[in-house]
Image 1 (spheres, helix red, strand yellow):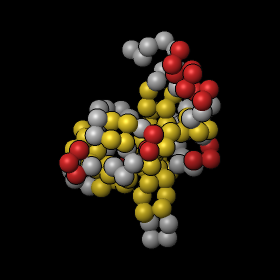
Image 2: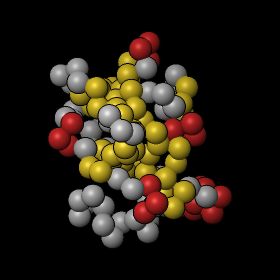
Image 3: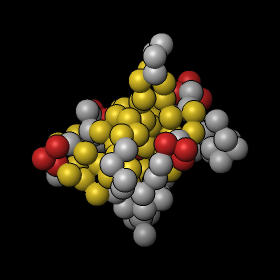
Length: 123
């Protein structure tokens, strides 16, 4: 994992894709694709910052020959959801993915939900 996330794990929380809603359902099973039509993986969850109510990273699962691995992709630009084929298109490439260990981040909790509800509105 790169230094970009180091030191931020105390403020970020993992939220499973089954619990992230969008207009067409949840992120469960949504494939992440690059603009040049390269499959990056499947969204398994997101890392959110409860106080700002912002998704900071997508947690992507990619299958390898031996087993699935998790990666992070920063949410830098607005992705485009193609709901018909359950694809989320982003301006990123496979090289932009960072290895990720889910054990480094706490799961989103009831306390985090309260922080998100009563924090200042996101700008």
